[in-house]
Amino acid sequence: MGSYAVLFARTLVLGLLVAVPVGPMGILCIQRTMAHGWRGGAATGIGIASADAIYAGFAAFGLTTVSHWMVAYQAYIRSVGGLALLWLGWRAIVARPTRDVARAIDSGRLKSLYASAMGLTLTNPMTVIFFAAIFASAGLAAQARTGGALAVTLGVACGSLSWWLALATGVSAVRHAVSERMISVLNRISGGLIIAFGVFAVVSGVLRF
Image (cartoon, rainbow, N blue to C red):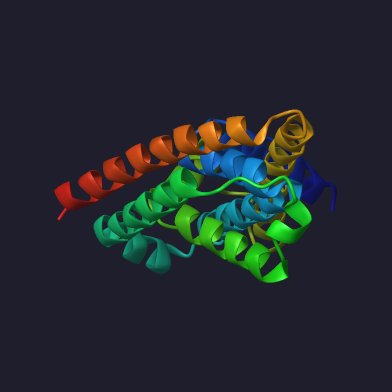
């Protein structure tokens, strides 16, 4: 039991470190928090953490067949993800900011934000290879057997989730001091960056065909 706790703690830190670098999902989480408040950012973060947990689980449980299939078709998967980023970036640019977050988002919208964030994160199949390499280099691969693999998966999920919830909380705290006009400007900037990431994903995917 003690060894599982150690595995959980170590991979929690790994999950946190993997989530922290700013990328398209980080920008998306910030933009959605600014647009929809804490609930929108949290739903997005939970979706990202869920995808990280899935890929960490693939690596920890040694599901090589699924992993190899996703890596083999990564060109198609990344291209689809890139197109989705282009759409989300455009929607962020044309979005009309509102101060009334309570009326701007409902449970159905929260589910949509969660699902789209998880789906987008899953469009980078190389993440499972990344986790496998980290687990091997940290000496976790040999320990991750059944219960250990579950501890590893939960550790990565909790580490990733802690970062995204902290990010949504921080952005939400600042949001109340930002005018609608500034939110609109930030939406356009973040939308442009998301589109840039989308173009890169599509191009990199096409070059792999």
